Amino acid sequence: MEKSLKVEVVAVHGFPIQNLPLELLQLPVSLMTPAERLNLASTSNKMENALMKLRFPKVNLHSLHIHDGTNSGAKVADIIITSTNRADDSVLVVKCGTSSMYSERLVNVKTFPKWIDARCSAIANARAIYKVIRHLIPSDGLSLGLGPMKKTDMKRILSAEEFDNWTSADVQGNHDMAAIGFIMNHAYKNRSLDCRESVRFSTDFSHEKAFKFNGVRYAHAPWVRLDHLIAMRGGKHIDLGHTNLSALEVNIFIRLCIDSEKPACDCITIGLTGGAPDEKVVLKGFIYIPASAEVGKKMFFACSNSVGNPNIAIITLDDQTVSCHFNSNEKEILQPRITLNAMKQKAKVLKEMAALKLEDVEQRQRLEKQIEEIWDNCEKALAEEDKAHDALMKNP
Image (cartoon, rainbow, N blue to C red; front, top):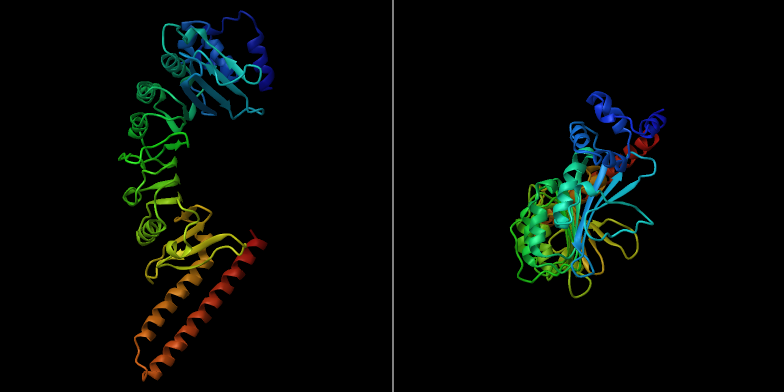
C-alpha cells in the first residue's frame, strides 16, 4: 500500500506538490528515498523551504569522508547516507568535491548542483548541502572520515556548526600534530576517535583531552605514558597499539583500577614492545584464576588481595598485548567471584599462620580447620550457583 502510494505521487508529472499544505506534504515526502527527497528539494527555493519545515524520523546513517585527492588540487568530499529502514539498505553518496572515493558503476553517486558552487571549496559545499541533508534525512549522528589534508582544513571541518553532530572520527594519514589536537579539542563522552597506524604521533605528544572520548584507538601510541592512563576517567573502550609502556607499568595501572571505586575505563588493550608480556610481572600482587581452559589462551580473573575489595578484572595476555575488562556483567563473574573470595580468605588465614610460633599448635590446627571450612563453603556456593544456572536454562 505504501509503496504504490509513493510511486503514484512521484509519477504524476508536473503536479504542483509545493502547493500542498504541510500536513499533506509530509506523507508523500516521507515515502521517498533520500535521493528523491533531495531531488525534490533542489527543484526550487520555495520547495526547499517547504520541506525544511517538515519533520522526519531518524532512520539513516551519515558519514562524511574528506581528504586531499591523489591529483594536485583535487579534493574528495563525500557524504554517505545509508537508509536503515529500507529492505536493501540502500546507500546514497553525495559528491561535494572535485572527485569521489566511489565508482558510479558500483554505488549511487549523485551531485546536486543547487548546493554546489564551483567558486567555493569542497568543505564549503559539503557544509551547504549537509545543512539540508541533516534536516531532510536526519540521523542520530555523523561519522567523520578524515584523510590527509592541511591542518587549516581540519580546523574548518571541526569548527563547522553543520558537522557538530559528529559522533565518531576515523583519521588516516600522517597529519600535523596540531590537526590531531583540533580533533581532541572537541572530545566529548558521546564521541569516539580512531587514529589509524598511518597517523604517526611524536613521542612527546600530549593533549589534555586525548582520553576524554567515549572510546579511542591510537594504533601508534609511543607517546602514551602511565600518567596518561592514571588520569583517565569514564572511558568505555581504550585501544592502544604500539606503546613504550612496560609490563610493570601495566601492572600498576591494573592495580589502581581494581583498587578504585570506579575504574579509569571499562576495557583497555595495550600493545607492548619487546615480545610477549611477562605473565608474572603483569599479574604480580593479584589473586587470580584461569578464565579459560583453552590451551594457549592466557585469560585470567584477577582481584585485589584485600578482602573488602569486590572489584574483579578479566585480564588477557596475547603475543604483544594485554587486555583488561573492569566492568563485566555480574552474571559472568559470579562463579569466579565465589572462588576468588575463598582464595582471599585463605590468603588471610595463611598470613595469620605464618605469624605463629612453632609451639602454637592448637592455634595452627584451628586455622587449618578454618581453611577447610572456607573451601567447603566455596564448593557449596559453586554447586548452588550451578543448580540455579541449570534451572534458568530449563525455564528461561
